[in-house]
Image (cartoon, rainbow, N blue to C red):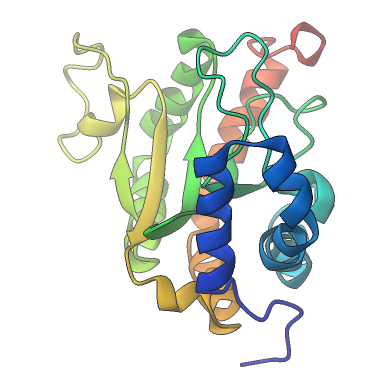
Amino acid sequence: MSEYNFKGIKPQAIELLCQNRFNDSKAFYQEHKEELKQGITVPMRQIMLDLSDLMYDIDDQMLTDPVRAVSRIYRDTRGNRSKIKYRENMWMFFRRHKFEYPCAPFYFFEFYPASFGYGLAFYTYRQSAFKEVHNLILKNPGRWLDAVDACTQAGFKYAAHDVYKKDFHPDAPREIKPYLSAKNMEFTYYSTDMTRINTPALIDELRLAFDIARPMYDFMIEAYQNMLGNGLIKPEEY
């Protein structure tokens, strides 16, 4: 294990984050703001610092600004049914700039009070845009299955949260059929062993998994570039 900036997210910090969420009070937040910053926000930003070289190697257009990559502890409640101001979960995205490259595929890391997870995901607002993923799978089924296998080796499980009921590709090979109905997709790993985010070894774990899953990111970003090239995603509209 190399020397990293990240030293761990401690149980006491997670407990304080939960207390802050429970109190949902600006006064409580202000009183503990510095503790929350040092115990939660700073370690999360350090994860980006320690992974930035790998992420740039995976995609040289990846945004590696640790401040922009990490979620805030307080929430913008405008237009939101829930008026709870503070979070008990935190996340970070490893992706291209969201305004220049809206809906681009991304790696992520997140944690909750009793679990954490990470992986690779791809969502688009328009279902028609995501069909470019299906087209690329049909053109390169072997490459796609190799990318899926890489995700499996990284410890990730596949999921699609929304799928087509109709089979648009009845003659497609059986091995790729499940993926051709997806309107979005993710390859993720989750654990309830919170001791693993309390140590710099988390960085080695993330680096290894993200690097192994690189073929899937390459596949997704190629499909995304096709979306941009075909005008299915227009940055000026987002």
